[in-house]
Image 1: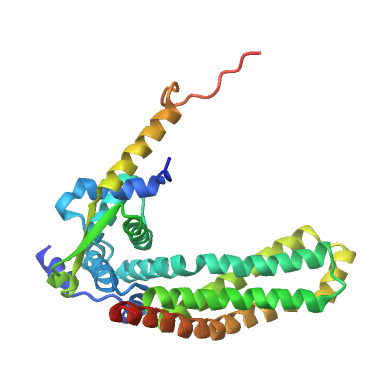
Image 2: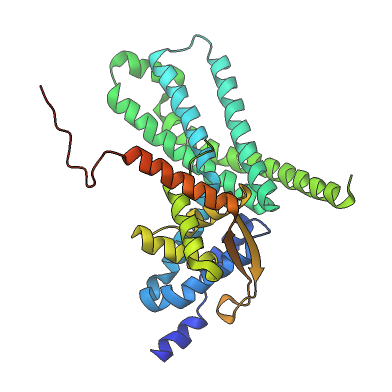
Length: 209
Length: 112
């Protein structure tokens, strides 16, 4: 029993997971929250779960990333599903207008995801991680949502509307992959802005400006 | 009436109250899990603690670290007077909602 305790007191969670966790935390809580997880990992999880302890730690890190990004992921997924819903039920005459609205909505969501995370945590890495996570979730929501729509509506007229809208390849492969790439790129821009704004506000407070 | 606390917020605040001087992040997480009898993600508890502190219902301070935490500080929480009021309001609301209904609820009786 003492040997197990001695072994677990030096146990380390996966380095990559710790590296992922720390930027996701606010500067105020970075040390305390990462310390809480490490303490729980060593004191309870390793002695109880043994080799599965690392999976527990990764799940906890995932919960922080999910909290930071799920709202933006839902917005991105909803934007794409709504687009396909309109294309199915009320096919537009002007695809250019529809594409413009959708593109700007996606760009705004990715930018805000990166901005808000970096502003909150003062970490650009958090901004990029959050926007990547949000874009991936949005892509998955979109695939599932459009798959469900196809399961409900797949008469010849609807399938023709889909073809005119861009086709199934676009819905299930092109758009989700482009969304993830765009999410990272625009999220990075948002992260730069977020960190910059947070820093300049902190400087103003310090100098009393 | 001010915003009524959600169930999870109540659980977190009550565990902070119960733990007293020992109310730090990890202890609060374990207490909430034990009280709710289910696995709870650390992210959920810490997000709730941050939110409650932002609302002024909790305050926090850093305490010394320990070797098992690689020396990282612990953050201790304390319920503030607005938090006590919020808990009392929440309990009062639940009592009002349940007034006249016996627990456990057995189902509606219909008269034709």
